[in-house]
Amino acid sequence: MPEERTTGLRTPDGRQPLVMVIDGNPAMAAITVMLVEQFDCRALLARSAEAALKMLKGDQAVDLVLLDLGLDDVEPMVAAQLIRALGPRGAMPIIALTASASAASDPRAHAVGFARTVTRPYSPRELYVALDYSLGRVAEGAASQ
Image (cartoon, rainbow, N blue to C red; front, side, top):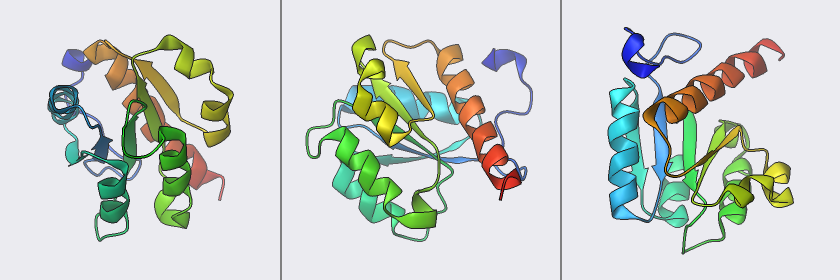
């Protein structure tokens, strides 16, 4: 549980994670950013897939992406594929945020390779576990290279 952890989340190499939150809903984005920061991560907010892609091409070394499947500007599965197409910069885990449990079983979601899918309304603990698990996948991927 988040409040039981004293050091907060860390990347495999011990850094404070930078988490990109891609969410077009201002209220949900604010809640998600607040929780990410509560878990001792830095948050980078993009209100659209287009803005997120521009930021990801920049100098920021993002460790993990939280992608709202309710985006309006680009179909979210396409957005995830565009993130992946960035090559090594797009290799970070992507967690899907959805309002519908059925989105988790969408075959396109499986093809994109989301690290986790978190259904809203989610508990802080559920989001924490998804972030912790996904940061652990980064460590597994680095160890296998």
